[in-house]
Image (tube, rainbow, N blue to C red):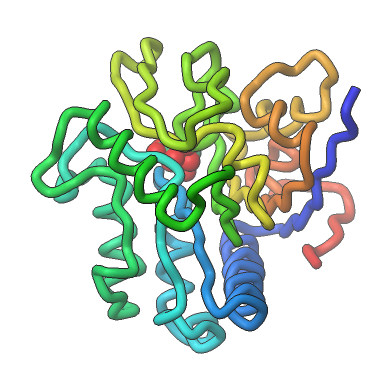
Length: 255
Ligand code: 6PG
């Protein structure tokens, strides 16, 4: 069985976890720029990263990165317009791009304005990735992921079509369990990235987190962590399944 390579950065509270993740992300982005003159990253959607983006968008973390050298992509996107409250792009725009004054040319939303049919949006995103990676899987410098309580990440949900795709990097993925269709990057992209970072907090995620190392765990996230190194920023509630402040065993602060 492949060895699970989880680099755990665990903290007692959610705010400490967010601060640790912001410092890690800013450092990795700055290193990529120093080494190659550019950092290509993908952002996660959902609720958890909003507070992380707020931290990244102001000192001290904002001062660690030359943001003009960063290209911002997305790991997945909902089938909604850019202005919709459920849009991952809209969330990043509000919490990161606007406060940092990021130029639109540095931002690569998965959904166009106006929104096109999802298959066309997937083909367009594939082409955008092929512009800088014409003959191989695109290698991002930093990928930020969240994880759902069912063990999905990005929009690679359990038992969905996109999980098996190896020859395309961006696809439209029907998600019947949520009666929807999403855009998502595919496994090869997540497996190829220089750094894959998960930010997962709260007791609701404890079952999925604690099951990652179970050999018979076939969740999309378990598959990824069993095939490459991943860095995890988690709070005590996620790691131990306990509400913050409950009596818990001695707890090693995150590194
Ligand atoms: C999305 C995300 C998704 C998210 C998880 C966790 O588009 O919703 O990409 O994979 O990271 O569902 O979401 P929360 O952070 O809201 O728990």
